[in-house]
Length: 119
Image (spheres, one colour):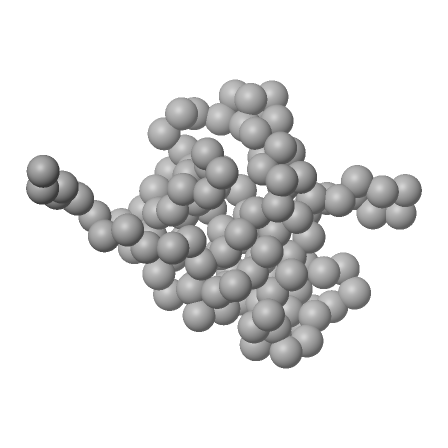
């Protein structure tokens, strides 16, 4: 039996921890995010170290690569992969800090808040 794939299968360039997946699914349901939206992960210029992370639900764009990670459709602009390859997104909920964290092996330095980096 021959299988035909519409798109090549590519490993996801980033990973989501179990805590991040749980929180993203909670946000998706509590905020009534439309079913055709996926999780956008990316970078933008700015922040105290040069780049800031982008994380939010959005519609797919033409220049996106789309991946499935633990039941979540993740979209990333193809040009952002060089900055994000190997990154892990986690969700922490502690006394001093609550929110998403980004562990990026491509960052040469990060700021104290953890949402800005340079590469």
